Image (tube, rainbow, N blue to C red; front, top):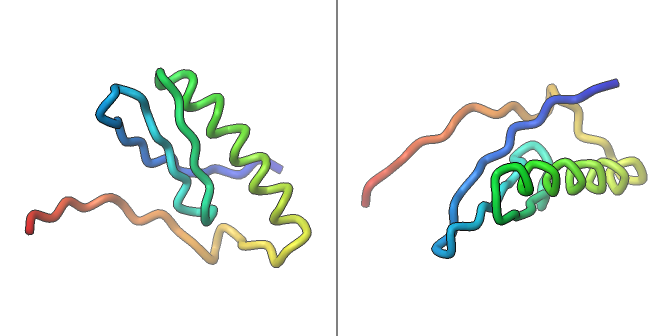
Length: 73
């Protein structure tokens, strides 16, 4: 069964990319290009899901991605 995940992407000061998956706590990866990041984050998601098998699974209904907001302070 396929699951969909959202990837929040940021660019660091060196031009590399960092991706985080809000639906999976602690799931993140990086890459020098967007293509590399997406390959790496797919692997990270698969590893997080493997770990989750032995623990209480979080269903898609439990956590929903809402969006991204920007705030100036």
